[in-house]
Image 1 (cartoon, rainbow, N blue to C red):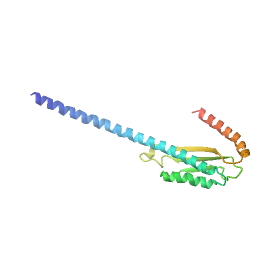
Image 2: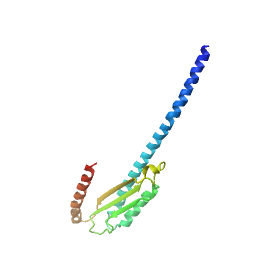
Image 3: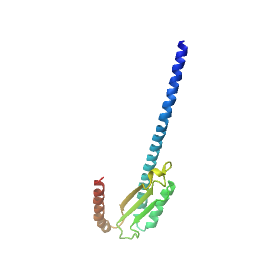
Image 4: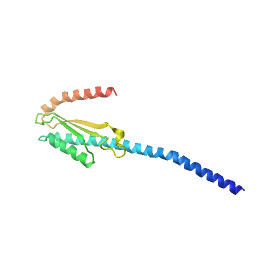
Length: 161
């Protein structure tokens, strides 16, 4: 008799475990999917940061062009398998008098998401890097005021966040 009763308890416990698994498993899958997508967005942001920085570094040397900087950024984005990114180099014409180079890279998340692209409609990660060019000291000195003004604008933009 005791054997029959313990068998029924185990069978009931097995059924409860199955029901719990059926209820919790979809939540676990949802959690891991969400975590995976958040990691992907963070990877996109890091790639945008790296591409903008490397492009600005390539454009800051004398004789460099904006097209070369765009190629450097595009190469990094292509190596990461990213598509439809926008790359903007300012100024478009880099001369010996150019003091600051700004590169902005924007990556649409919905076009580069692996699991749930529809969840990130109209979401774009972007990065902007401004570097001082390798120029004579007088050109660099003129860039200091521009750099300070840009820094102040950035502080004002982030103060509202």
